[in-house]
Image 1 (cartoon, rainbow, N blue to C red):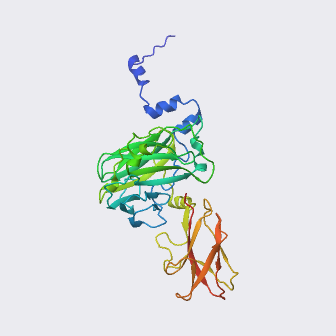
Image 2 (image 1 turned 45 degrees about the vertical axis):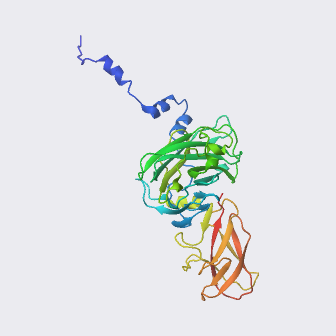
Image 3 (image 1 turned 135 degrees about the horizontal axis):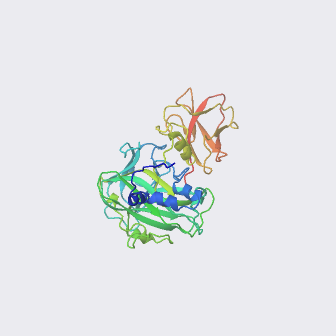
Length: 388
């Protein structure tokens, strides 16, 4: 018995062309990967963002600062840097002017311009890392990995700007890369990849081992040589060559959010975390007993630590909600008025008690009355600072 089957004609050339569809750079990399581990690294599965508070949501110290003219922390983990020889002054605020997908940004506005820029004048925004958090970079080994920083930036000034990575454990080895703001007053997304550094292993401890820095302006000490775009020993004149001087224009602004430093040569979408998690991570470096939006010694006694001393030997132990990076500097405030090293009697706003702080550790501290008292209820607030 013969069975005849009819099938439509097949265009062999078309079928072969379909097999040659482009996969894109990422797809090709996945196909070339030889192991599941390589594919895992390519897609950056798991936690990716190494830095904290990249979305600029946590501001424990306050949300608006005027007359900023020195080195100060504002947004948690981010240090506004103005050197001693610099004369520019700025206002720093937590801004709600943001790109889509974010709620807060760090905003710098120049209020006093520095048009001359002394030789050693330096302006920037710094972020410091513990060495033990960067062991995955494999720095100083033949297997060292590249790292990529991505961020959203907006400025009233156009031009060339510089991001710097620096190894603080090994004589300040550094690598500097440019980015460009093309449109004034417009949010722009930037990604910059830094090459691996096979020299200089980072210490595996809780000390300041590494930092990145967004330059805002620099004197001639920091320019004159082409940017150091590969890892090398410190060359001061190659750190900020061509950097736009934000502080050279009164009223100039610079904003940033969505900062993400991650392993690898490809930037992935920003890794958002809950506010509570980000706050707890930041409290390893800085924390306080009073509300984030309040100043030290605010009249509101909510959350104040209380104790009832009966002699100079009595004391109260205070435990931190989050263990800190190192034994912090402690400042104790009375509840009302903001005076330091005093507690305030709960039933008498004018009655204060001098106290001393002792037994400071990463887990807490103790407070002891300096003079004899009897059966009085006292309250105080504190702040603890263990920044790098």
